Amino acid sequence: HPTRHYFRVGRRARAALVRTSAMAPTPKRQKTSPHRGFGKLILFGEHFVVYKAPALVGAVAAYTDCTVEISTAEWSRGLIVEDNRPAIPGYKVDKAGEMMEGTELVLKHMGFDTTNQGLKITLGGDLCAVSGIGASAANCVSVARALAAAQGKELTEEEINRAGYEGEKGYHGTPSGIDNTAATYGGVLKFLRTDTDPLFETRKLASPALIVYASSGITASTSKVVEDVRNKKNKDPKWFDGLMSQYMEIYEAAEEALKTCDWAKIGELADKNHKILQELTVSCDKLDDLVKAAREAGALGAKLAGTGRGGLMWAICKDKASQEKVAEALGKHAEHVWKTEFA
Image (cartoon, rainbow, N blue to C red):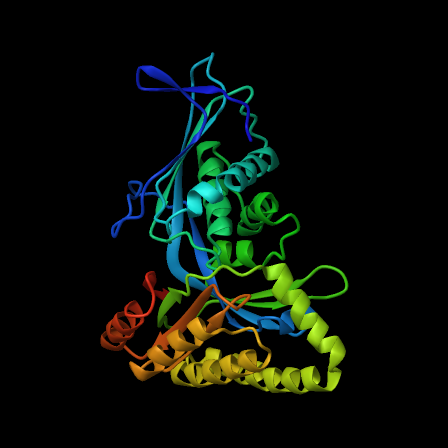
């Protein structure tokens, strides 16, 4: 945790701490802030990506934005983060330490020393902070953009991405690089692990896809689920290879469908991918119920997103009316439901 410092705000000096606001239907936004980092959902490739299969990740249109104020007072030192992002209950309190560490890593990477100069960071936007949506990367990227602007620096997107990656270390130790890359560039991201550095390929979509995503309300340990899948793979390699083969067919078809933004095809492939993930034993009753509810409400397709056995799921919709209907249906099964786009 940071040392307790002070920063002038109005007529008073205030201690450096994290201020959180309760979740609200309409989040508090910063005025005309262009300093954004996007959220993300995994389209295809959960778990198989661990074994060097390619994965597809979609950046969502929902974002975290940021403004920064650099103190001009000679005596001012320290850091204040005012966190006005919408979030599920408990998220910002639980993640406060990691968020501060990630923020300080971004500042260090960009050469800003709060022991010499005071800084206030204010976070906002419409991306609801929940595990699985890439909220930490969106946070780090937005901070990097805002600080660069305040410092008068014109950074490339790759430089912003690198700063976001450094910040992600405060949350994940050794991040994959997926979330910060999606948060920086938007669009669809192809990710492939290698024996050295991972390979990324970004692609902008010709037209947006309307989606609804929902939280199961269950938090699963990523490391434990990944280890369990690994044990099952080692016990029955033939079984796992069969599922991998099915996944690769889905991946190749998804690559083609994305070129023409064939969302009906993407929905069909999402259904198939969810079935494979069920066979991989990484779904759960709650996720299956949400996926089923979305399909019955008219979604083009739906699947879990991320680690599984909890976390998030997403559904793709043909139009706004369908998106509303699917969101309403999911709202009967889940406390937290969001509408956005892959864009």
